[in-house]
Amino acid sequence: MSNETVGSLLAVIANSINDALRIMMFADKRAWGPDEFEQLRLLEDLLDEAKRDFQELPLLVKGQFYYEHNRKPESLEDLRELCSQFELHTKSFKDWAKMGGPINPVWATETISLRRELHRAQCRAARRIFNSEQETSTRCLGAFQVYRVQRTPENAQQRQLEELMTCNQVGKFERYGDLDIAFICDFCDGYLVWEDVRGDADEEDHSGNASVAGSVSATEPTSSTAMAPGAQDSWHAQGFKRTDGEEKAVVFAPVAVANHLPTEPGDFQARILCPYCEDYYEYEQGDGEMEAVKWNQDEKGFDDVQSFQEHLEWSHADKAPNSSNCALM
Image (tube, rainbow, N blue to C red; front, side):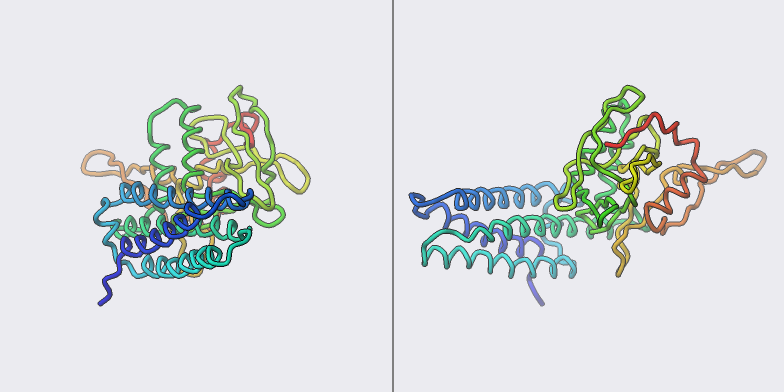
């Protein structure tokens, strides 16, 4: 029986990163140019983030010991593959140290990619532990981080900003094709797609609240979400079509992110629960008095953001303020 665990495989990866760092740190820097110094910085950032994830992610589940000694097959498979990739990456630096000359600038791109994949692998490992603890189908661990912020009693402006920041901590927004915007969750790899939305506005909403500025390009992910609401407890935000610039109603990004489910095998789009149905109670005649009965919504949720929005427009229009009170970005 294999003695591999999440912790043991992460240790192998950490050793590879440390080996590459040592090679760079002890190399003769007299002939170094910008590429060499940038490569050193990227390796340092990679190791810092890997350590931070290893310390912080276990706090979201059962703690360090359980996370480190976990043996879920999917997590081990993810990390084994990364062990091989990091080993090859470090070999490039070992060969460079022997041969000398300028460093290959392509390695910087590889370091950035491996950093991203290692972060997501650690997030997925934590999410699998989280899912195994739930008795029924539930939100993705990434979704739960945003959902928890939404349930914290704070003033609307402060809470919305924290929601947006938390979204960017659990995944990333990027241009999806020529017209759409997608959020990709680091914890489940699920996509949430807003169709035909422009993500490069920078303006203040008509309610007087400063909107959140950001951008989405076809080549680089954005560090900010695509839309912001004008009222607390609303699912509604104002968007602009990328095709013709006209206004359109969209689902405020944190509402969708906070309620998405881990993707089903073979799917790439995450399904979404309705938070308003989840809190809804019907009243039925009991023994002499009316009793509140919790509404039993479909645990599979809605197929995508568009079908989720259609449900919200049909069943929860009271949660959407006038569109003049909302702004994109």
